Amino acid sequence: MPIFDYLCLDCGETSEILIAGSGDSPQCNSCNSDNLKKLLSAHSSMSGPLKNSMPGPGDTACCGSSPGEASCAGPGSCCGRG
Image (cartoon, rainbow, N blue to C red; front, side, top):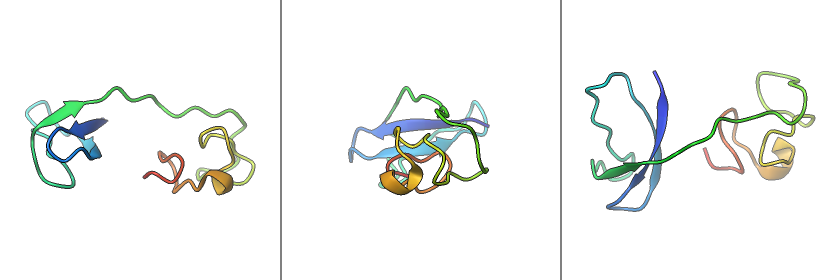
């Protein structure tokens, strides 16, 4: 089941939404609107070797910085945006 990024054209918020099937109609996580624009998103890449399953001080996959310096919230997040 893929996760897609959507921009809500009503409230302007960006949401990550899990799509379970082709008949799913995604809704904004903030205002529940279905007036969404699907965004192009890129996968995360590691610029250093994987140390743990969670980002750590030696990993540099968080916006080119170590997770502690960039305030990463965990896997799949970047620069404190979860």
